[in-house]
View 1 (tube, one colour):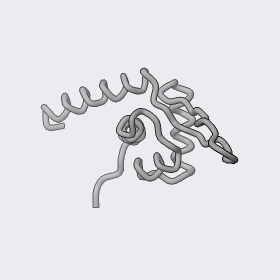
View 2 (cartoon, helix red, strand yellow):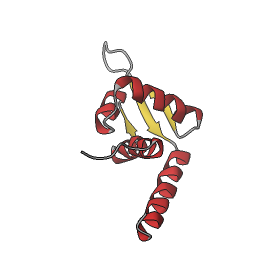
View 3 (cartoon, helix red, strand yellow):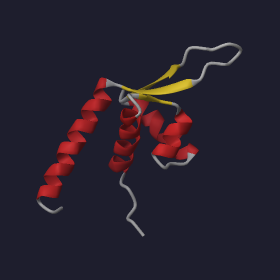
Length: 96
């Protein structure tokens, strides 16, 4: 059984899932990709929106459909991913 993910690792996993889908993803897909419950994902999304790492947008409407929400990563979010990767490489280099 693996160890639990830290808060930072969860944030990294959420942002990475968005980046891997071309920078935008539907919330339900993000929930599955980041392996979080609906409640936990919403909690993390609120924090990421406050910190301007992601934004929620409405996708253009197609015939007779209601608009769907899209989670988009921001430049600040991409910067977080890059710095987190550097930090992980640094700690791995020392076996930590």
